[in-house]
Image 1: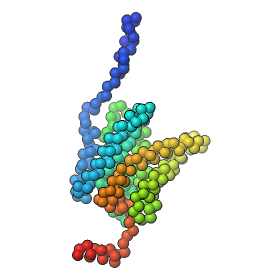
Image 2 (image 1 turned 180 degrees about the vertical axis):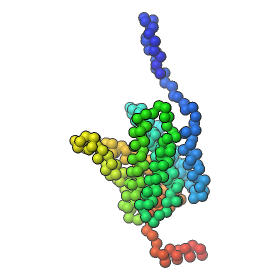
Image 3 (image 1 turned 180 degrees about the horizontal axis):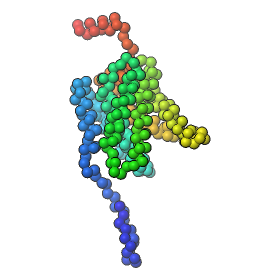
Image 4 (image 1 turned 30 degrees about the vertical axis):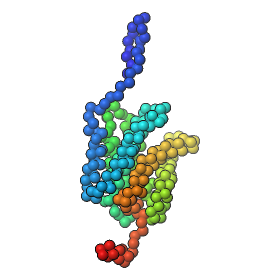
Length: 264
């Protein structure tokens, strides 16, 4: 804020700028996403101490995104707000998928991916809606909403394709590299037609590659902490394997034999 008054020859017309951070009238919108995650932790499949580790990547993402302006001081304030809203909404959405993936037990990977998509879209949009100050947002909110919807659709598609690259084998490194490659590929397929339509086919490659690298990097940056959690946590590792169908199905005879040995 800057105080301004015409004092004639008595002094400057504007005083020194003063920075003031406006606080929300209520902290409930910020707390609601965390309350939703805590509610999911009460569900029967998540009643294990290991399930509470889902808060680690979630807290890491939501806290670290606030330090981006300090790392990149020249970043425009509008871009900072867009990045914050997008990352926070996707982070809570992915956390919800990880907690609800116990219910995604289809034998077909495509059905699991569709469930992944529906849960991610729903929770991301709910978090986005409840954490916005709609009195100050206009067209910017629509743009963020479109970017969020596309991101929540691309992430499950890339995850399903990365699962195919693993060839029904649990290989963490291959899965991570495949996820990044598929995110880049799917985003290229999504953004290239948009750029071609807007520019009537005359679009430099750099204008397409740069946005693809940025948005794919954001999506991978959101996914990576949850992937690392799954690699180190047996509960979420089993769910990730089931979600992406990374383990081949056992023949009925072998499966029955293993059950008998387990009972003994």
